[in-house]
Image (cartoon, rainbow, N blue to C red; front, side):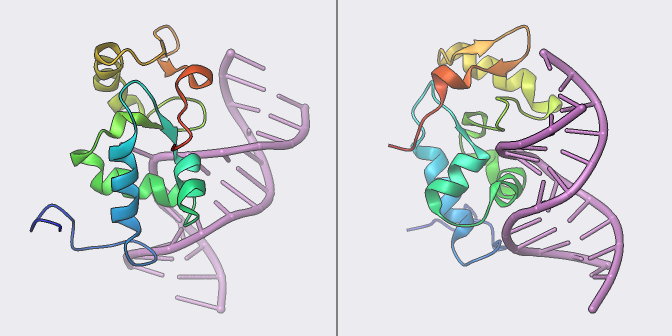
Length: 110
DNA sequence: AGCTTGACCGACC
DNA sequence: TGGTCGGCCAAGC
């Protein structure tokens, strides 16, 4: 059951897409990541850009740093805070290039 | 109906 | 390794 106010009233695309994305993101284990494209593919719905739109608008309440683009990076404003999380949960991370090591950290969704 | 805008992606220099 | 380009999918004007 969704509590009032937790799930945004506005939805994107097919009904329930936002919730499906957010639930999947919450299921990503500590220290692992998925890419926007991985998520769209796993859900068999929408595309990377739609997933990005969901994270941009509604990602604040979930472990958003576990979702990165296909290069292992996030927008510049988010990199600092994301790096803190990566250190704390031991996510394979290249400090120099400020990007997750996808080869080691990518999670296939189970 | 056409054009613009996005937390994107892969191919190709 | 890094930049450009075209494609992608949906929403908004």
